[in-house]
Length: 267
Length: 267
DNA sequence: GCCAGGTCAG
DNA sequence: CTGACCTGGC
Image (cartoon, rainbow over all chains, first blue to last red):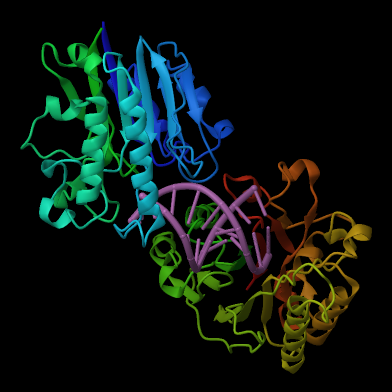
């Protein structure tokens, strides 16, 4: 059995419920993790996704910004809530599906100034990554765990359009790259999309709204990730890793600034 | 020759350019006076109306609220600008068409509290009506003059859904009714729509957005008017006055809260 | 540049 | 309820 897992920062699920449904029908993921749903639980367009064949959901909404959710066509069981957001934002939701624990995150973007003293949003981002690292260190590496979502860090040189320029810009600063590596090491995680599409292939999942033609300028970043624990390596990597960035979705009418990312597991 | 003149508070002409075009094609007015265009001159969808057969325009736009315009299929000549708005809002525009002077107004709504001491918006409304009355008194009654637009007063008992309740509500308070009667008397004007559809027939041109079903509750007001000078009585009344409120337009998808009003002249 | 939310006005 | 505009966030 193949299990396909996707993640997408949808930037308002109410405005893009039709696009989510189209993606579900086109790509048939078994599980779709959403970030920035930007609505309360009761405003989530659950009926539309249920009608599309995804009756199983975990919704962690809130008014205004943030908000995360998991849609599934397979039954979901509870997974532990991770205490990673000191500000009480709806930025984490977890569930178990087909024996795999999926933890879906919307990590704070971190503001403009990459200095935790001057910029509390950047401090919060580092705090969030630190708490998540502490959680990961507590886990049994042999268990089946996926860490996914909009992690708001482009960890590698080929995950940004210009490594040199981006080292000064939040999402690719040295302190963020170190925090991401510490998180990876703590859980022994494998970056599954990079395993499928190795360096030096440039790979982006986000392009600013400001560019008129995102393909022409292609100043993207890879902020959206699917990381797997050692216990999932066999299912994800044996026979070759399968993953992709659905950048065609970024070209749809009135798109999110993020493209969906998906990967397949053999169960 | 028949000349059909219409007036419509369109509540954003950019949002409803398609509805304006549909109304022009359906009803074929020779002249359409618009209020609350809510755009600057350069943002007015002139090309669309020109393509619909209305190449002659007078646009008095401004950023944000207010803004008035006249569309015509017949050539327009200049008419005097009336100095009626002490606040410098774009609330008046005039033109001569087929020998008739058309003065198109968007009179201030006047806020909630019908007390000029407590509510400067109500004071402004009364001031506007007073200045317009002074202008009307200066005019030669034998000249052909139309006063039209969203006058924001329902002058008669049968122009409101409840005369008793509305006497306390801005748009139908005694002081406004007196100001409207003073204006009417100053120019010797005839309320052309009432001449065509006499009391006690209830007649409304505006219904609040707040009612889910405006026809069911029918709590309307007649705020939009076409008034004619004594010099136009023959053209408008001989052989029977012809006028109507296009309330079907209020039922269109995403409508203005005002319906268009039209009347015919024989030239 | 897009989105959400608050404000002001009708 | 609806529309425009502003601000903050990304």
